[in-house]
Image (cartoon, rainbow, N blue to C red; front, side, top):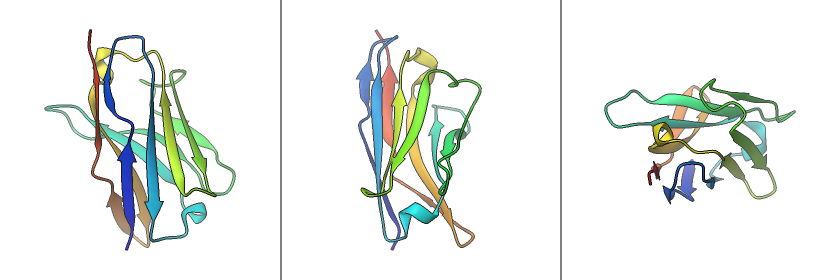
Length: 116
């Protein structure tokens, strides 16, 4: 079965950096686009970044462009989210996501808190 396991969250000061990882299993990782979403308290879940399967093309939410970088290692079946210049408004639970055969799969989420 499809499994997505996020790691790398934590508490960081404003202006700091974190790298999130999502280890995938149960499907042919290299064949699917992967995404990161986030959900802040009291807000809807929002798309942060997506990386395609073949060319590794990327797309970002306007709020994170120039600060976040999504990447993937198909040999390790892992997708990453490198976050820099973090702001308090980046505080949220971050989720890994894949859509496969018309079904949506989510990881359990990892908490990122940006605070001094």
